[in-house]
Length: 184
Image (cartoon, rainbow, N blue to C red):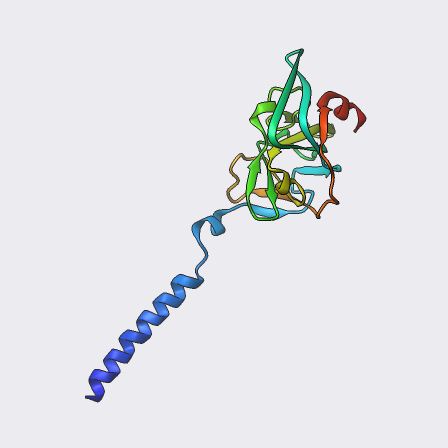
């Protein structure tokens, strides 16, 4: 009888150990995900400015004026980017809202002359540009800017630039991206 109880206890203990191992082992995404950095990593350094909000944006794309509107708001972040050792491209740009949702930089403005994602950054030359996100208004209040050289970073650096809660800002009805780019 004691032998049966001992075997049953060993089986229960084995199941408990397996459950404990499974519940405490990090997921594959956590193991191979991006490596978080502040405003600078090995090759890239970023100075991010004050975010701006707008309902409509205007910009030049291939020398033609273009206007875009949204049901949410446009979140525009002026940035200055530098490459230290070798040429680079920031292919991954996302806004992570306070609730954890991530919004990729808008493809609706990727052809704008002032848009950063995909454009080259040369060592020793600072590139002044804008990051533009189309987000719900409540998602623009606070969050973290996520930037990386890879579109989907795995085991590589990802810059995390936190933006604390902004005071309530009424979005501008319209902003000219080319004018903002010239001012920053």
